Amino acid sequence: MARWGVVGGGVLGLMVAHRLAGQGHDVTLIEGVSELGGLAAAWQLTVPTDGPDETVTWDRHYHVTLLSDRRTQEMVAAAGLADDLRWVETKTGYYGTDGQLRSVSNTLEFLRLPGLNLLDKARLAGTIVYGSKIRDGVRMERIPVDAWLRRWSGPRTFERFWKPLLRAKLGDAYQAASAAFIWATIQRLYAARRSGLKKEMFGYVHGGYARLLDRLAATLTGEGVKLVLGAPVRRIRRDGDQLAVDTDIGTERFDEVVLTTNAHLAADLCADLTAEESARLRGVRYMGIVCASLVLRRSLAPYYLTYITDPETPFTAVVEMTSFVDRAEVGGHNLVYLPKYVAPDDPLFDASDDEVRAAFLPYLQRMYPALTEADVLAFRVSRVRRVFAVPTLGYSRRMPAMTTSVPGLHLAGSGQLPFATLNVNDTLGLVEELLP
Image (cartoon, rainbow, N blue to C red; front, side, top):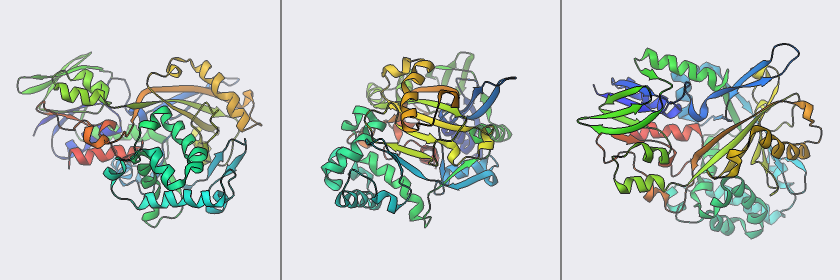
């Protein structure tokens, strides 16, 4: 039985620890902050009332589970909450340059979209269907995403439909991204349909990730995993036959260590890596996220996700969580996320919550004219500078390896996901790759 250390208490680190414990190892999980979950952690939103303020607890960032997300459902089952998954059929909205909000929840509604003629729409639909049938991600990462979309959808459809969406998710980095980005997105959305599941059904756990993470922590403790929270890691170094993990509260020594941070932080923490390994880690191009959570008095629309192709939008999309999550989960209120994907050095990271509100809210009111300032009961902003590794051309040939030159040191994070989107299910695939 080996002694393993897992650095990082996000869902990936939790499930790595779960897998190792199941294999009979002695496992310690180390997390820098006082709570588990990482990007999937929950947080609190304060709603002022005439009496004591009300607290709404839900996920810090928006998450959904698809019917085809096997790994995520296995994680929920490991927490003993399989029976608490709620499945709801969702609708999708579209807000274009004409300032009109429309439903695009079915084929007929899609065909009614303005701005593209029937041939454009046929080519757009054909692009998506064709992309769903491609199985070779390596082939797709040899092609720039804009070139692939222009070829199959046409230049007008690219400029009016694809380009605004690419810029919303990748900013100017879309010009460096490969077609593997859009391919991975299409593959995930079509996974359920290939399984014979024709409806767009999204799921969530009753109680949200706060409850899921609490139960996972209890499961790990019951399996003998030692949880060390509030212990920022400063260095991971080879010390004789073991690896020493230096934290703010002391040093732990292990036979094997799995580091589940972003690639840049991994390079900072692991000084024993070779120059080439460090260069690969630091060469990963990331997008970060500034995500506002809003608690509202009223619903905005019946759509879970509203795509925005207007280039003037200050945020990427509107995610109305309570369009499919029961409002009773959030105190009877309405919960909306306004995400903005930006480069790690974007000035938006340094803006205060009030400044983000002043930038976001006027546009949201333009989209939904009935929304007033008084309808906004709470507004809180999450900021994470490195979230999503941009799949640049030929990325799989340059990405950091999971097993390093340092004996016993393993890396697992978004930098090792060349053909995936930013979601829990794809991230959990690294558990199977690292520990088959």
